[in-house]
Figure 1 (tube, protein in one colour):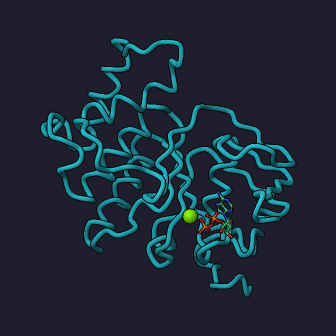
Figure 2: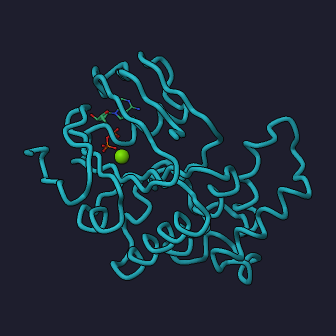
Figure 3: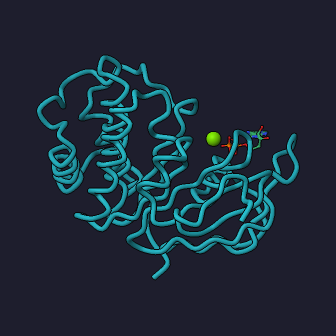
Length: 223
Ligand code: ADP
Ligand code: MG
């Protein structure tokens, strides 16, 4: 079963034509997909089209479910004065846009997710004061609050130490295996992507140049 189907998607920014060209891609339930490719190849643009943050694309994107999202670091503010708990809970807002109040079920979901990710005991700490690795863990928890099916992450391990980065990949793998969460992420770390992903997709100049199993992958789409 496909959670997301992308059919002949093309997208241009006002100042950047053809940021994406004729993208066809299906995201199968229960899989771990890594998007790789050099800077400026269109990876973040693709995620933003899927999430509805880039308007005016051509082609079709069919979504079967709510999506949790962890943006690229450059797109988020990490110094705001909120507690871990508040950041995680804010992930539930997309589920009940009509209300500014959190429902009991939202609070329970946030608690479950924080416990699962090992951040419940530190939930009253200020988000701005925890390490970069912990912040990403909190943002994964936040993304999980918006969905029961799929999270989309944009370079969640960028700037982290290798050992912390490995922990993040292992956490995502665990969410896939234990909770059947589908993982769709942009990765700057090809080696790790090949280790953990079921499917690797490489973008180059807005086009898919590889879509297949990690063992068949060669950098640059030269296959
Ligand atoms: P990646 O995530 O693979 O590094 P992006 O999707 O961010 O690449 O960018 C793809 C191309 O679109 C790049 O040439 C980039 O400069 C351009 N681009 C990205 N965001 C914008 C924007 N908001 N306005 C104009 N051009 C953009
Ligand atoms: Mg990017």
